[in-house]
Amino acid sequence: MKTSNGVKFTIHADGGARGNPGPSGAGAVVRNELGEIVASVSDFLGIRTNNFAEYEAVIRALKKVHELAAGKLANTTVEVKMDSELVVKQMRGEYKVKHPDMKVQNARLASLAAPLASITFIHVRREQNKDADFLANEAMDRGA
Image 1 (cartoon, rainbow, N blue to C red):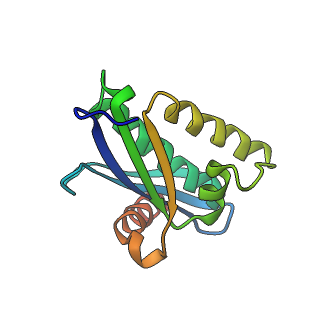
Image 2 (image 1 turned 120 degrees about the horizontal axis):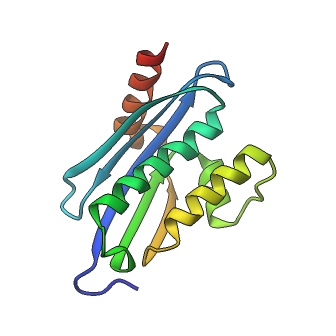
């Protein structure tokens, strides 16, 4: 539960692969309560699947949140917005995680989410995720 001195972040995350599997990238933007960008991610991931990259984008953004909110994680709320319906529904528990690689990614993400006061996953349309998409594509371009 968020307290009056709690911290709130919004993450827009996206991952992609050209070929699936293929050259992949993770992109994310972390914003504070005022909507200011306080961290970003644009990392080339090597040859991976699209779904792996989607998870990795959120994982890397949550690591940034951990750095920003060090010592205050129990009072930190995070809203994750992404256009991957699969990741959103898996993290909400609406879809089962079946693939072994995705089980690992799901567990990594869950462990980063555990110390937070709350985390919510929201599916958004691709147009509402342009910043993260740009960073993911930039990472893939750098790695190609």
